[in-house]
Image (cartoon, rainbow, N blue to C red; front, top):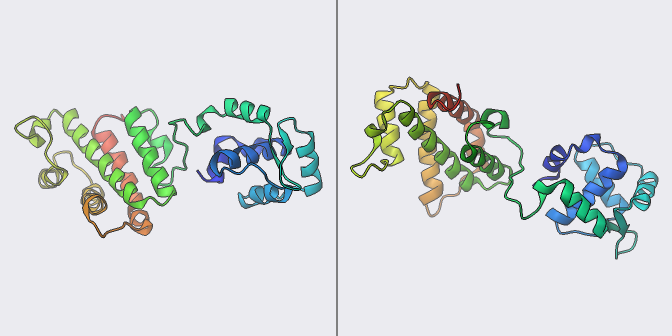
Length: 243
């Protein structure tokens, strides 16, 4: 997780200077496994995240006065105390390294679009956003393809037409068949954007999942990310998940 994402999660902008220092030490310990930071390093992390640079003299005073912070092992360094670690871990329990909660930016699919839909759909969306944020591009493409497939099937189910895309064992045919069948019939009146997007991610997801020498580029996802978001929203309504 990027520090900027963590700042949004913990409402960093509204914290006091002392709390900001405590949170930087907490983040660095959990994410980057760094315990000892100098005042200048703390100030730089905060500044690089887009906040005003803290006055070093006042910053040192805040570090000294905080009961959650103690002297580090290295010269002129500070770290979280055991008490500080426990209190912040309790306060931000979802940020615990062992938690399954996914905390990421929503660059591909906005949270407000998926919130209140289905738990598994929300989790896939968060994994898509997280993969894109961290440059796991092949994983992102496969997950985007998977979400499209899920919502397509759910659209057929909602309209009680799932038999049209099922095989003899009542399982579902492969995505290529479902997309081609949907394109040729278009009984759900999908937009041209959605129809084109289905094909793009069928191909892109297949390459990422099955092509030995292919690696998806972030630009390939970025170039179609807006169409993907529009398509997902359209399918959420066509499937009856959103009303």
